[in-house]
Each structure stands twice: as structure tokens, then as C-alpha cells.
Image (cartoon, rainbow, N blue to C red; front, side):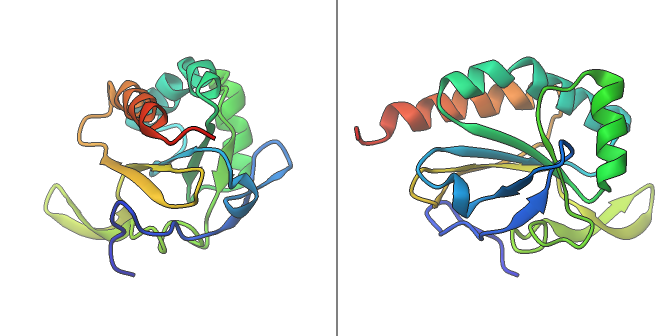
Length: 162
């Protein structure tokens, strides 16, 4: 799928969460949603990123947003990962790329001269209207969660009053 742009209708999906429930983007309509896609549980960068989002989970909630981490890992991996680090953010499992591919994040990557398909670490703010309000590629992992929180604050401040 082609890359999404800000203003596009966000692709809907339903994925299982590590707490035994499911997350549906359509069911979250009416409130902002922050989705952060990360490559792998329990790797150094992904652990840092998830811990930073967890440290700010209450701040995201205070702005009325639903915060969800998504990776291609299994529910079992997510449960272990979340428990090991005491993560506060629900983690969605997407091994079949039901959200990853429609969001344009499964791409060819290069690492140490080797090419492979993988997830491009990216976060999205989906507005209460179901449209992509902000797309932020995580070029630096440390500080990414704070950058997303600031983007959400700006989005909420600019949103029309209900």
C-alpha cells in the first residue's frame, strides 16, 4: 500500500491486545488515538521506546487519547515483555500485518549491508474523526515518546471544540 499522508482516513483494523481484549480503531472513534509501531519486543531500542511511552501513559490519557503499541510479535511475547518491564501501555499483536501493511510500514530495510523486509518504526496520531492527524518517523528512539506527547498536545489544542 502507498504511504499514508496526514489528512487521510486512517485504515481501520482490529487486533488482539496482551491483556486478553481487542483493540479496534473504529471503536475508538470520537477520541484521539496514538499508535506507535515498533519492530520487536525485548530488543534494546524497542525496550527504551516502550518504557518512555509507559512513563508518559498518564499524560497521554489526560489529553483524552488512547495509546497503543503495535508490533508483529505474538501475544505471548507481548505478555512476557510487558510483565518484564512493568509497561503501562497495552500492546497489540500484528503477526499477519493487518495494520502494519495498510499503514505502509512493512518495507525493505538495510542493516550492515544486509537487506530484509521489516517494520519501519513510526507513530501516528489519529484524530477523533478517524483521520491521520500526524505521522512521525522515529529517527531517534530516545525522546520519541515525548515528541509524540507534544504533537498530541498541539493536536488537541487545535481541535475544534465539541
